[in-house]
Length: 262
Image 1 (cartoon, rainbow, N blue to C red):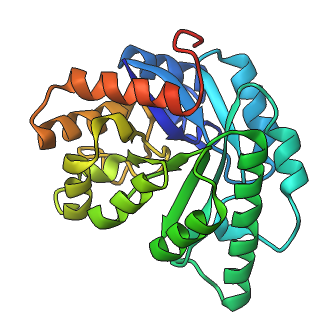
Image 2 (cartoon, rainbow, N blue to C red; image 1 turned 180 degrees about the horizontal axis):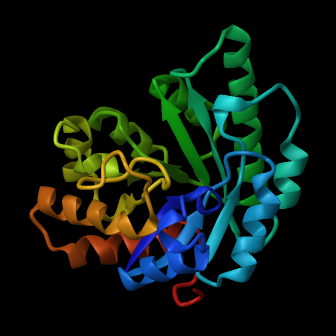
């Protein structure tokens, strides 16, 4: 069995499933997916995802605000309040994204919101889900200076080099790989896939985004997380089952979920 450790169930394209999330999840379960972590990108997602998690025993969720579309406000109270729910297992996704950076004020706002997520994670004793794009040095520096390392977290959809991955591992973060690892020219990600210790690795779809080969360019679905595991197994020269068992165990350990709760 495998786990989709990062997806956005409220944003899936359900055209192939009669507009039914239930059918999409059932198909994923048929493909071996036993748990789904659906991740917030807006504050409004908190209540939406809580309802989904209540409806489906094998779904857990996070609370957070993606760095791309933020404004300067204090949200730590909101994060701490919404994050107390038992099925809310993480804070994020949060981080820094300089690819979409609008101006210096936007950069300051991203840093301000990132700091609040870090403080909320420490207060809640729940791990962080980190998004970083063209900002890896600042992201790691901020985590090193503000994050105490006890809570830990995951570098989601990791696309940086192995040197950066090692720094994240040293900060008590896991490395999560998405469908990008199946892309032929994703050489940096391939190196990370081959070198990250198996006990610090997670797999994800980030669906509906970043569909793996052979579905690249299409809307992604949690069922396709198996292609991520298969590619990692091929790169490392080990079995699919070894990747599946380790990433599943890592997921439950990081997010403090007792295996079998699903």
